[in-house]
Amino acid sequence: MTAPVRLETRADEQPVVDTPTTGGTRPAPRRRRRPSPGWLYVAPALAVFAVFVAYPIVATIRSSFYDYDGISPVRQWVGLENYREMLGGLDPYFWKAVTNTLLWTVVTVPAQLLIGLGLAVLLDGALRGRVVYRTVFFMPAVLSSAVIAFAWGWIFNPDEGVATRVLRAAGGSGQAWLADPGTAIWAAFGVSAWRYSGLFMLFYLAAIQMIPRDLYESARIDGASWWQRARRITVPQVRPMTVLLTLFGVIGAFREFEVVYILTRGGPAHATDLLSIQIFDQAFDLSRPGYAAAIATALLALTAVCAVVLLRLISWANRSVE
Amino acid sequence: MSRTATSRVAADRLAWSHLALLPLAVLWLLPIALLLNGALRTSTADIFSLSPSGLTLDNLVAVWRETDLLRMFVNSTVVTLASVAAVVVLGSLAGFGLAYYRFRGSGWCCWSCSPASCSPPPRSSSRSTS
Image (cartoon, rainbow over all chains, first blue to last red; front, side):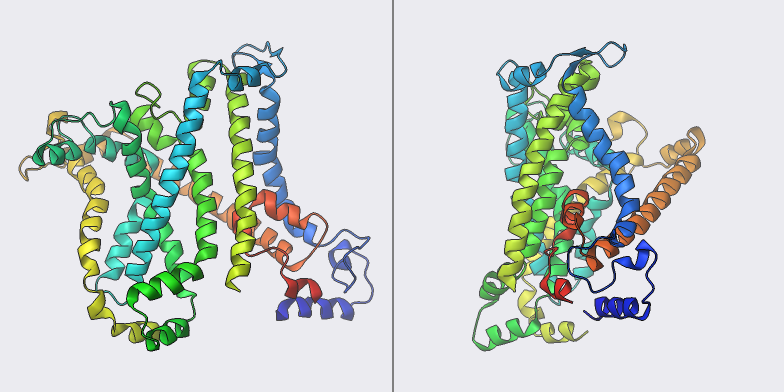
């Protein structure tokens, strides 16, 4: 709170304002003539953003109007033909991928939120060994996708994998986890929950430690049980973090690619096909970068809509706590 | 820390949570343990073996000899250092600019560049009135 005030006074001490650097620090109302010095701070990041984010997005949208093979320089303008093929039911795999991507999102994000919050609540107290637990649960978050896919590929091995052995020991028969369309996507859900729950736990731990202790004290004096305190204090108080993590999770779910691709390549029979995998397959395996760009644009639109909705929710959640 | 002291009373009551946490911790460590186990087996048929016999460091030696592991580590380190440095410098500059100056398009910058990191509402009342 004090820092902006200091900036204002410094501007007053220098009445001769001849550079745009100090021009905007005068206590002028919102509308000013000179470019705000804020732009100078933002400009480097904005330049990187323009080159590595904005330009590729524009280029992707542009190539979605073309039909080409990605190798020859010949590009044929086809207008909205790619979109017609994609949305018009001509490509059943696209809709399969949309369904899977949405299913992926609505299953894995709540799972990660629930496990993450649960772990955080359990590990916030003075539990013996909580540092060890936190480290263990956070560990998957620092592993690379290839390593994760490799390890879980072994676990789901239909003959010797641990998951198969456990199932056999429990009286079941062998199970081709990743080759069976019914189980493949659920196996991948499990890997995703395993991977990100620890990260969510860490964010929730930070949020829980921001909660004023006296809330718990007075609740305890009032005779609230452990469960009531968790349910009535912790959960509402960490709501902004929940919404933020939902945003992270949804964006992450839409972008999920490597682990699923290495585990199943979107198979069997497109059972684990995600939009991101479709984009890769169309662009590189089927040599249709134009069509892949159209799918990428659809994914971008989906992400943007979700992000805007969740950002609105974030301001709502912040207000609800204050 | 004081919060640890206040919640120490609850430590005994929390002990039951080991019942939930221990199996989960095992599940969380399992893939990593299997990875290490696999790294210490030579033949593919042996990868799934869990017996303590037949463990060998041959793979690790082979990796060190046959690939330029050091080079890869150096590459990873260089990429990591460079990108983290760039992110910290560019991000903190932009973050300062967006937090301390209110200007036309600043909200737009917040939303498009880094929507998630602007989780506290960008238009906080205390700042704009100063």
